[in-house]
Each structure stands twice: as structure tokens, then as C-alpha cells.
Image 1 (tube, rainbow, N blue to C red):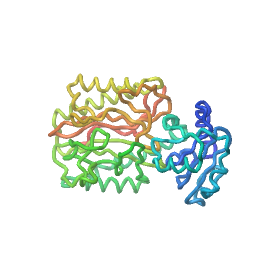
Image 2: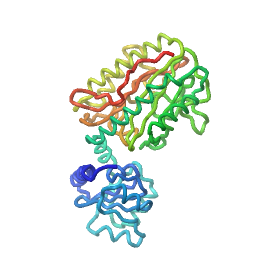
Image 3: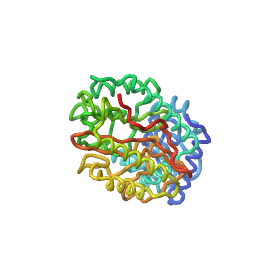
Image 4: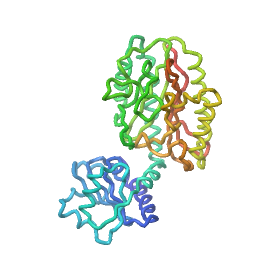
Length: 388
């Protein structure tokens, strides 16, 4: 639950951006966007005028929205006849998040508010949301600490003879018991995952998911994450999981091995730590996202692992870090073409990983905050491979 001061700070920030773009206000309908400004995820539409107080229109549950949100103006969602009267005729240009709003919903609100121009503010909103307040950073630190406490206990229950799905179920159970909400929200269309992935035999696989490691999954309908294959001796076991607390997501990966590790995989892992360390030092305000990606890709290429960097050869993910917060795929992205400078308070999951066909996948992932001194490690526990 967010405070009134926190809600007002976020509202004031988006109003400033709306004013700069000459807009009369913004209408938010995507649940996590509504939650960001109001503190409630109830089924609602949020109107933020360029000046004045926001108005939350709740379909269900009105009583819970009133209980959870600090906003003063919370109303039941009006009928189609009553809705237009809430918006004066002087309101001509309305911001809308085209990146997540179905066309059907845009058509619905366009019909309800005829004569208005709906303008895409997806980029404005995402950039604003990428910079975390002190309250949000504390939420992420608590989330990271909870995630680390569960990961630290993995050697106690990771046993020979387990299948990928067995360790996935055990880890997911413990994450849930530790308070993880499970909802790994993603903004990108056609992307989805169930909490994370536990893979070994199926790690070096092709797949739809826009990440370095995909896994085989349990069927063609769910082709991501753990399969029913047994965990194998002398092969890396990748446990890549999120933890969600109060909506805020941290992302981390650790590697476990029964027995010994192939020397090529060990070299790739050592390189992943070098890349992570170099990026962590560079995670300062003003650093250019694209340049950090090029640095990482250059290190991989120089070490002879360029074709294995960030995925299966030929289907590599084109980033080395992604913003995290209320969604797993927030801004900024450390990727080619992303020329924006980093800002203090942004939080980024750095994940240099390598996939070597026939041998497996390996790498590291931690969540960091951008600071003047470099990246603050939020998922703060040892990175080394655990040999069992």
C-alpha cells in the first residue's frame, strides 16, 4: 500500500510530462499502471488531468479500492450515458498507453469520448516508471533479500535423481511460502513465464522466450522452463527465478552442479562474472545503455564465446540487461539501439549468459540499482557455482 505522498509524487511527475507534450490528461486502464499511481490493482480506469486531482473509476471491487488507495476521488465506474459528463468538452488530447491497450478498449473509450484525440504516451510513462523512488528501492531491497534467503537454502533440497520439474516445484513452493506473489508481470506482447525456470538437460534449447535461456517446458503449449527430464551429472543446473513482493520484482540466477563441470563451461561462467563486474562498475548516471551492451558483447567475442553469448547460436537475445520493477521487462534495456543514458534510481537485472550446444547453458544474473558509485547489488549473495 503506497502513501498519499508517494501517489502524489508520481502523479505530479506524469502531469509535468503531459503538460510538456500539450496533453489535457491521461487515461490509464492497464492494471499495473493503475496500481503504480493509485496503490490498488482493482479493475479500474484512472483519469489523471494535466492539472488537479486524479479520478479513479472502479468496476470491481469499489470497496477494496477505497480501502487500498490514498486517492480522494474514487467512484464506481459510471454507465455509458454518465461517463462522457465526467470529461469536459475542453479536454481534447488524451494520453493513452497504446503498447498494452487492446484495440477494442481504445475503440470503446473513443466511442465514449467522441471528438477527442487519443495520443500514445507509452514511452513517457515507461521512462517515468523506470526511475524508482526511495520507497520503491526499499521495496526492491526487501524483495531481493527474501529471494536470496530462499536461494541460500537450495543445496538443502536439490538432490540427485530429481527431474527439472521436481526442483522447479520445490523452489516455487518455497518462494511462495517466503511471500512471493508469483505474478511475474510482463509488458511485452506474446511473452509469458511461470515464476522462472529450472533447467539442466533442456537448457540448450531453442524457444520463443526473449531471453538467453528458454528450456524445453512441459509441452508445445508451454514451451518454456522446466521439463520432465532428469537432472544430469556434471551438467550445469540453471535456476533463474523472480521474487515478487508488493508487486516489485527482483530477478536472479544461480548455477548448481552434481559432480564436476566441463572446462569450457567453467571458462564461460568465469567470463560471465567478468562481464557482470564490468557492467556493475559502469552502472552510473549518464552511462549509455547501448555502450554497455557493446562492451559485454565485445568481451564475449574477444574470449571466443561471441556466438554463444545470450542464447543459442543464431537465436541470441539482443540484450545483456533489462529494467525490473513492477514488471519484468521495464526500461532501461542494455541493448543495441538503446542510446538513452542511465539515471540514478533505475533498477536493472544484469544477466550475461552463454549457451553451448551439447553441453548446456551457464551464467549469472543479479538485480542492481544505478547509483553514482556504480551498481548496488540488490540480490546480494555469493555468485559462485555450487558443486554438490
